[in-house]
Length: 134
Image (cartoon, rainbow, N blue to C red):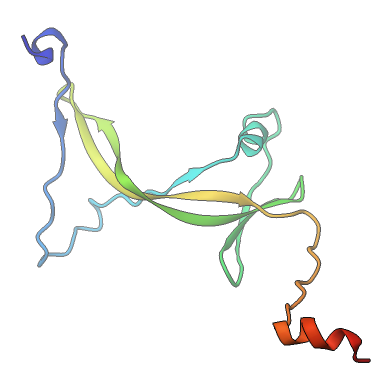
């Protein structure tokens, strides 16, 4: 006896893949990005007075700032090998796939203090012979 016979199933409707020669209808394509939030930020957002978040550009990535706490996070895209499918209920007691995601956005905490400038390492010759030179 198969498991389909013992457990009720919910039908899943997935839109057909578009032809490589056709452009998708912009009204039918939902653009989603899932953001992985760190636990400390989730606690702030679920608190009684959730802070206002701002996103601003930087030379290397976008930055999410929490001005009330002076915390900042770098936004980085993570590709996943397994697709995430966002579903919505249909009128016929089924589910309809409205988006398929192959990447998520993670927040990487930035240090709150300014980091010291990186010291440039010198070559091996300098390490061996330049110590006695003044």
